[in-house]
Image 1 (tube, one colour):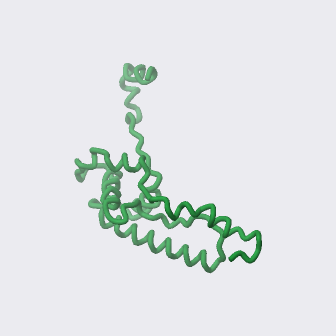
Image 2 (tube, one colour):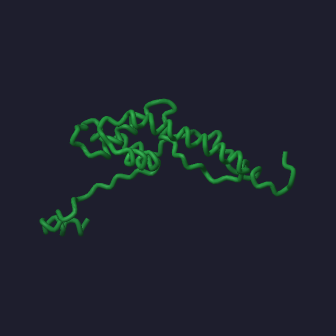
Image 3 (cartoon, one colour):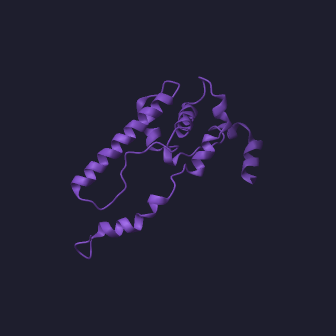
Length: 148
């Protein structure tokens, strides 16, 4: 089907073909977050992050068992008309996923926070530590933390 020898979109399609038969899974880091025991003990006083994480867990339990789609279209070679069409499809599916996700959140959360969470759901990390200033109050804990 190539008309010219140097048509990049054919080469790109060939190099990315593996994506067609690679199973879409939830990254292990995210799976670990969704298994956090805190999610089974949520209360209205629990931090918003855990409520959003529980909504994400519920989202992944529904077909197609994936994370919400982000509206960011991967970079590719395409003519403008087809790229814009594909971009609109991505955006529509991302909006649909966000709406479903929003329906799973059980506490009031600002819409901008939901947007940010869904957009970054593929890259979530939870870092646990000591509250700022706590080590200053306990010199023994500070010395123990330096030896670890």
